[in-house]
Image (cartoon, rainbow, N blue to C red; front, side, top):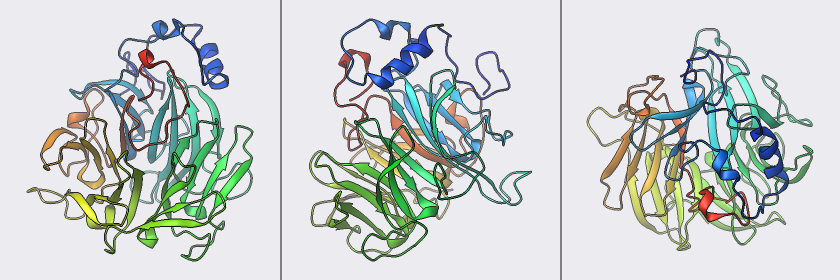
Length: 375
């Protein structure tokens, strides 16, 4: 999709308001804003609580959809664009007020024409609703570990203090960077894969917990670990000790941990003792990819679970009994549609519901509830 007028660029689609850019910049400086009428300038559909934000990975776009699948906002031109205008191989997106934080890794070799050797992106960036980048860490097409460089950033989490927690997978580390682009905290030894003290092997996500610890999905070590700021591991979760690839982990309000066990094609809820209390397997339907490798499972406030069933090319919402309540994309059928997500997704990697930060790190400490930006 190229905007309401189908412009051929990766801009966000929304009615333009001349003063918005200045207000968005001010919001970054004032995360604990007071009551105001700024919310009135936003389009009534954009960032509405209950809408779904999807990282449509190999369509090189982030989309916001309504519950019927209608796309009301998009960043990225689509699969044909391999320039910095689009988030190539986008893995993760989250709302920070009206802004959007995006982590883009790149397109793997041979997936698209012109990418025989791969097309790296390696950026984490924050955009306004019009698609303008207002902050960025990493450089487009540059793979590295020096200052302002990343290697396959698969997730980014905006922290309440205004810093950004980046899962820098190819560099085997989790880094917290400030807005001046300095690394202020790190777990994992840069460029060294392992399972010893302060070591990771292809980490895939990191969330800040209410107790100040960091919950990391350490994918190739088949575990999620809770670590302190002093780099000590205080808890490990493996979904009962099974061998798989833990692609995502979040801490639920009841103290349990929700794991996306990509290697075993399931979402798993475990208690504090790593005992399985609920699971949903994503490859049991007729026509399913035998190995869809779901990449994200996020529990919602209403008890439903939204799952990015990656190589089944769909996002599904399931209840506790395993019934699918909603589906976006067509089962095991990659596609691209400019207007409706129900008929066109390609390996969606992440999906979040606007205003619902259950199990996730809220980007602000406090906020006006009526704006619907958080919780």
